[in-house]
Length: 252
Ligand code: ADP
Ligand code: MG
Image (tube, rainbow, N blue to C red; front, side):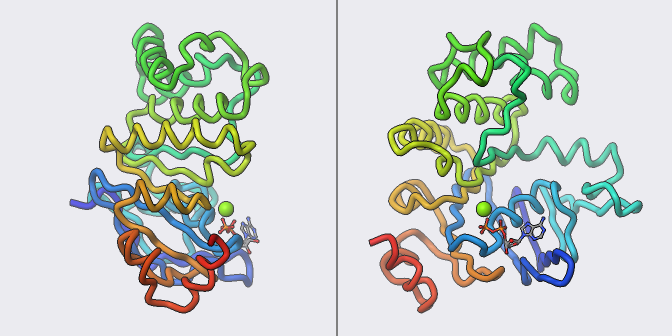
C-alpha cells in the first residue's frame, strides 16, 4: 500500500490556480524529491499534503484512508476531529524557516506535541527527545532556547521535533535555503542519515546534487503541473521535456 496517494489535486487562491491536476504517490521507504522553479507550487503542494491548506478539488489518502474535508469549510483540515488526529500522525513537516516556538526551550519544543497529541508522559517524551537530539549531535542543547542556536542547529531541532511524532512520512520544504552555505551540509547529512534508516521522505529542494544522490524518484514541477517524474538518472541525464532541460541548465 502507498503511504501517500494524491489524486487530481487542484488548488486555487481566489482566481489564481496554483496547482493544476497533481497526482503522485509515495511508497514506504521511498525518498522523493520535488524540484522546480520558484512559484511553481511546491510549497503549496506540501501545505495541501499536510492539511495546512484546503484543497479546491482532488483527493489525498494516507495509508489508504482518504482524508475528508471538514464540513464547516473553515478549518483547513480534512476529516472529523477524531479521524484527523489519526491521519495527522502519519506525517511531519519541516519548514524552510524552522518555525520553532521561540519562548520554549529546545526540549519543550520537541516534547509539546508528543505530550499533547500522543498523550505521552513527560518522562517518556523527554526520553525520546533526548535520544533523537543525541542522534543529531545536539544533546547538550536541550535546555537552550532557539535564539541561542545557529540556524543549522535550529533546523536540526525542527527535524527532531517532527521525528518525535514518529511520522510515516517526513516532508521537507527547502530545509537548507534559509541557511548560510556552510550550515547546509549539516542538515543534508541529517537527512542522509534518515534515508539510511529508510525514513520515507518528500523533499522540496534546490540542492540538485543532493537530490540526485539521495532520491529514489524525482518530480519536476513548473507552473502548477508535474512536468515529468522519473529516477534521478532519467531526470538529470535524460530529461524527456524541454522545460526540464531549461530548468536544469541553470544548475550546471
Ligand atoms: P514554490 O514553493 O514552488 O515557490 P508556492 O507554492 O509558494 O511556490 O507558490 C505558488 C504560487 O502560489 C505563487 O504564485 C504564489 O504567489 C501563490 N501563492 C502561494 N500562497 C498563496 C496564498 N496564500 N495566497 C495567494 N497566492 C498564493
Ligand atoms: Mg516554496
